[in-house]
Length: 60
Image 1 (cartoon, rainbow, N blue to C red):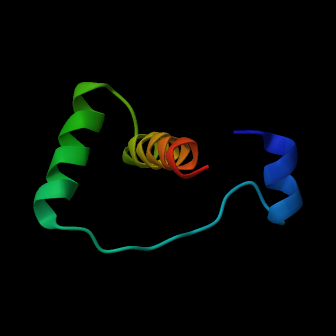
Image 2 (cartoon, rainbow, N blue to C red; image 1 turned 120 degrees about the vertical axis):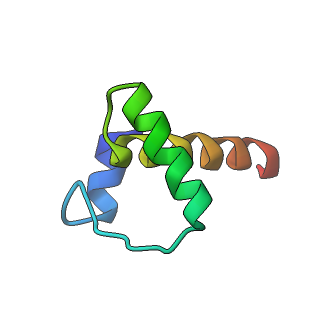
């Protein structure tokens, strides 16, 4: 992510964003984070960033 562009859009580098996801998906995220010795937040950030970058490249 380009930090300069991100800073222009938000007053802080992070923003709390609460969502509800299916329990099974939450369990998969927790298991992946545990297996890879990382935080759930990191897994979600990377997954969303990867997904959105692919969408941008597909849509234009």
